[in-house]
Length: 80
Image (cartoon, rainbow, N blue to C red; front, side, top):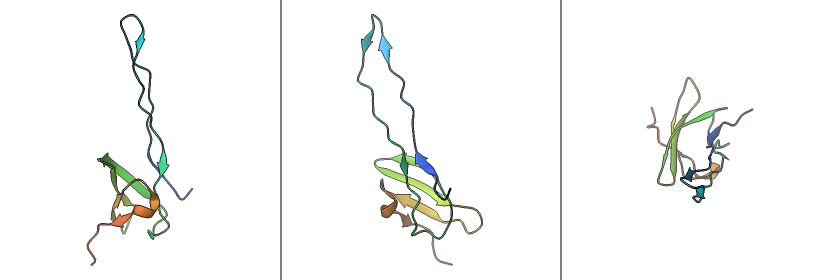
């Protein structure tokens, strides 16, 4: 498989006291690996404010930034 799932989460219901339920947040898994990156793998390391950061596979590793979709990938590595 050439793609790695970057963002995923499991939500468990929250209950207090006499069984009052709170609204449960919704999470969605998104495959962020892009064909624009010359690597068979990419790894995510952090998320926040609508952005995801990570790097490509081993060897010639490249720093990457996404904004929620594979098409939004930006290579942050300095040439050379």
